[in-house]
Image (cartoon, rainbow, N blue to C red):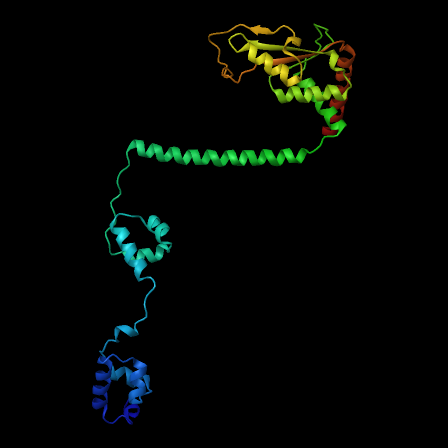
Length: 287
């Protein structure tokens, strides 16, 4: 250090001048240029213990955020709430407020806890419903336009699952299809049309519980298949059972529609044959 101070023989006098300039509000650079001291070590010794003037301090952009974070913490806010409010990181918040007491957590009442749980469950159900609908839309788009053969095969399977079938103990070769799903009825009628079954051969009847709105159901099914309500066959009423466990008892309950194909013995025999052929092919594929 003696070598460094060689050119500054009157160090104490130089320090007095440096301190005076510092207290007069000059910056390090201004003092350096005034005194021609370009050695940082010497300049540090000359200004040792003298704080820089306020105007030379760089403003800290986070000072306001820090003050606001401390204010919110004192009001009982959590780190998550402060982060959302101020848009800063939790690590910064922790540094700013770690000397402050933690806010007391108020114990929730049973009603409050139940309401929070309900909101969370409702959000989960909404998400599930959105996913379900998205899956259905994607699957529907995958079907596109069916060929005649595709509709034919679907119709055979549909009838054999839901239609009336001939039994060994009761040989009745007739085509009768009963279902409560309007879309199933629509597909079945499209299949019959593919097979060139004339509309005049079709007869319709409603099957429904007697406690339901029979007139409304009859009108609905007549409109669905495109006929007058008066063209329906006599409605079959099912007796009410007070001990029933049925869930379909609201205003949306419309019973079932029965579709009969007059003179359908030949068609029934062909359906049996088509189905048998499909079973043979299924067995071949699984052999």
